[in-house]
Amino acid sequence: MGYTGSGKSTIAKMLAEKIGADVFHSAVIRRELGYKFTKEEAANDFFLMTSKKREPMDKAVYSILSQKAKDSLRNKKDVIVDAGHFFKWQRKNLYRDLRKFAPDFFILMTECSESNILERLKDRENKFFDSEFNETPSVKAYYSSKKVIEFPDNDFFNGIAPIIIKYNTETCTVNIEKKIKNKNLVRILKVLK
Image 1 (tube, helix red, strand yellow):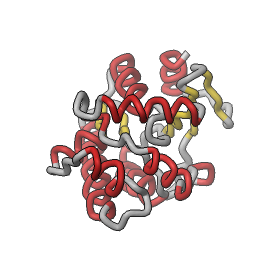
Image 2 (tube, helix red, strand yellow; image 1 turned 45 degrees about the vertical axis):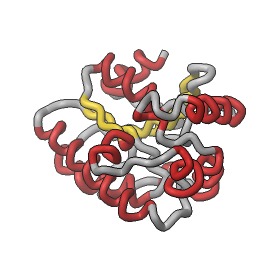
Image 3 (spheres, one colour; image 1 turned 45 degrees about the horizontal axis):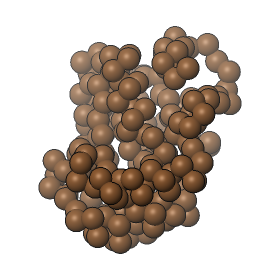
Image 4 (cartoon, helix red, strand yellow; image 1 turned 30 degrees about the horizontal axis):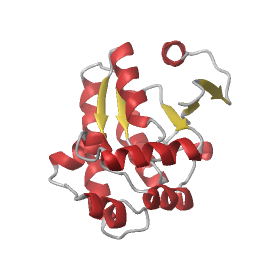
């Protein structure tokens, strides 16, 4: 979870590789569903968190992410879902759909300074067509997500309270509010440090 340009996909890919988890990216799912954008559409419309055009796309994308996560857990694989998860309904769907597997649930919130995010977004705009992960080059999208984000601090659905890990991708520092003993948490922290 995190703002656009905060390093979600980079960390998700690295973490998945190091711990041997399946990883599913919202950007990849959007493309698989046929959502492709010009640079102008991405900057000015579709990726604004307040855009009504997003709703059907987001519902489809998050539904597929949840299904893919279920399939991984059914196959006894760890899974990472790389997406913004700005709204509680997006996280609630995962909690509901995955609870029967009784997984350890972590939210890894990527953070960094606004100046770094703005620099990364500018770089994305210049390299928009170089990577499927460059789909959100918009400063407007970043500012709109800051206005609407529903932080997970009080998430508790169906008996699941996730462990929230805040990771600064600039300073490579970790912050966890709940100190618990958990072998999967230790695996994650080992990679992040």
